[in-house]
Length: 232
Image (cartoon, rainbow, N blue to C red; front, side, top):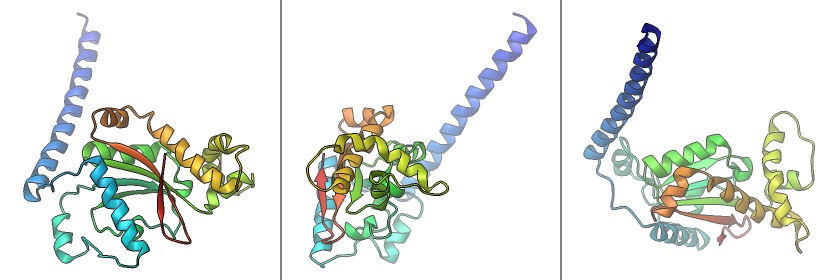
């Protein structure tokens, strides 16, 4: 073997070892955290969804329990997190997941971005929550009178990078085209469905779904009533 090829092979091997060592270090640190703060009994995907639905009903009835918000809870999740749900929702200030589902610290892995769009960064964050943290439920949640969806429907010209999320929503409008009813509300649902389709292109997420470890659902939040309706 020529010296150049030998050196190239050596560098490739060293890089592979570095990646493996980095991954190993990550796993060791996670194991240490889990040992100090053992993970709770994992919920099934259906049980996780039911927990969200029940919390939302408490919110609607104005009877919140404010779970997992004590000083003790802070200590429980300080070194390790095990969120039972991951939610991709709009950045709208009126749609805070922990409040509308009556949950607490460490319960929900929030990924919030205008229009609840599945950007590459959002998908990576979700993969992290599902694969590495073991979150069994993924919800994409749109909401009534979404400004980002409205801008896409009305084809508004927006300044700066504000236009980027409108562009990301436009493919979803084809699903809502020619449907009876309010164009914006139809587009809100269509956008949720479209973003779910994008998420299902992730091999990591698909593998979790096929193994039964993950359930992906859509949701629509009603700004007037506080109710989250499950959509597919």
